[in-house]
Length: 203
Image (cartoon, rainbow, N blue to C red; front, top):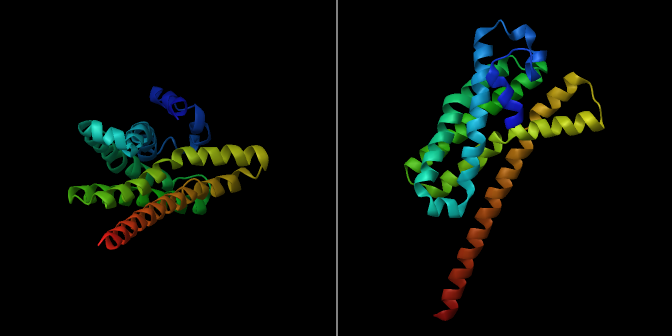
């Protein structure tokens, strides 16, 4: 992702993805949102990744909090709002526009709920919302992976490909996130039942 994004920091308008968006370059909100969005991706991916290490949270509590705040700013202040602007002008017409709009809204909402839950010391809820939020952050990677795989195996029509990968980029991620959350809840409930059962046998 760094290799993909860094060239855009030169603010050139004839490189990479921008080559197929030349007819949008005169739209100032879109152009500004694009370059800002690229910055948000660089911040949110590594900052969010560190939040899932138990040892890091225990040993580097202050850094966990700092990086968590960086992630919040990267998503709530940069990534999601600019993503909503870019969604309006997305390739793939209405199917892609709806998909990217939904992605931006859910990304903002999940991250906001993660912040809200930690403010109220709801640790487990905070973790669950962060899993959902980061699943959408990873769509920046999974979308490109799906696009590469499908383009090199099925060679579909470019318009259809973009419409399909718009949804494949984040929907499977959310399903995996919910599976992880449900699995974790099941394990914890099972552990509690075992503890209760053990204490009953001892008494």
